[in-house]
Image 1 (tube, helix red, strand yellow):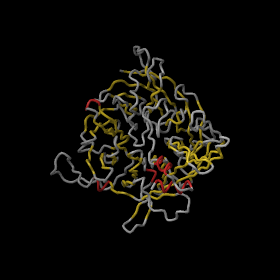
Image 2: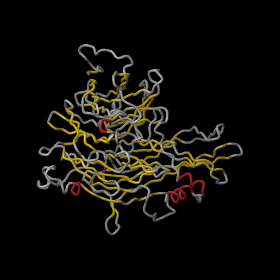
Image 3: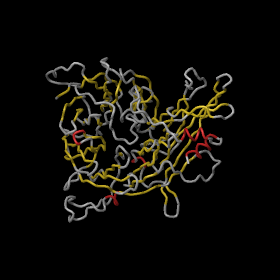
Image 4: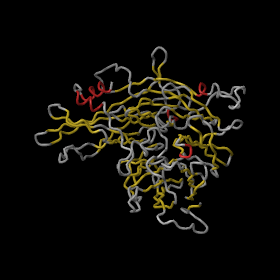
Length: 539
């Protein structure tokens, strides 16, 4: 199917060389040098918030602080930290305009911004845009799989994809084409969407950014660069930029298609399982409590093969909150207890997948229940009430990462409001749903935890405290940053920050008073000054 699609896009018969390249995708290298991550800040299309490349700061201090803050977690792209935020000056004298600011991740220097956007800016996505190089006789020369494109969404009508142009010059000194270029921008002219950008997936050759609108529409946008090389004078003919779009629809028993019934603004993430570099499952949930799976490698037959490339996908399976909760009981530990199904609830937290993509975690937020779903079949593997008698609303998470104390077993983390003035972090065993421990976050928290390579968790609360919690659920340190912390911390590995020959961690944390902090390890541990203060760690 991919060969057919690419053949139509390229406008030529796909020969053995192209098909061979396309069917052998090049996955991102988890050990690549530098701080650039793919396709979101942790190469994390499954939204786990697990950073496997580095342990976070064990003895923290503030390296830099920059004005602007972040509405959601930043993302790395092109060596810069792209941050969705409110403009510092209000943005065209109207605070409803937002922008994406860029910072140097090492020193926090302002590197410009993209915007303004209208609506609610979300974490940008970085997707792969393949480059196919041919000569003037249409003979295949080279395939580059890791050329980036950047997807941004401010809601409403102004979501966009910005693709760096491969340019009009070429350097063959190392035997491979390398490019310089400007940019090409594609405006996603969708209907209004409070949260327009939902996630990303790949079919092995093209990366797609997934967009949604307030009317239940879910679509995706990818792109291909086609470069023609005039070998006689090593000159590039101006490249062609071809957009490939996709649409994800519901289908009834007679084959009629429709949009989702719930608001797509509640579809916080289209999350893909990656198998051999392909997204075999794209999962979408909505505010009506619907959970739908698509196979992103199997589009429906195109009604018009001559038309511009547009792929349509129908569900592989469909379930909902009523079906998942149909055998829940008042007391889950007593099989004779009365049934306790959920009449109605929203899946308004991100869908998160385990490390091999076989299990999806979804949350019925208002009822305080967590469900594990088989991504292949849609069957419920387990369900867990956070409390048997009280209803704890889930306010943040889920995150998934390995627990080194439990032999590396994957663990699910969610944040729930257990009292009017208190939230707690819950750790659940991924295999069984068993609650392993609870941690009092000393106030309300709306922050999804980030997990480092050693299993430590980083999470903030509305009082302005950032916590590092050990894998056993005990506090290692807290750091006061002066204002509520609601966006998930972002952890990056940077090369030899302290000039000791070792890679170092930087943890980026935004506060609601519009500051963005970079937290590093203190090179020479010192005692805590008396009285504390902003940026002062407390053991």
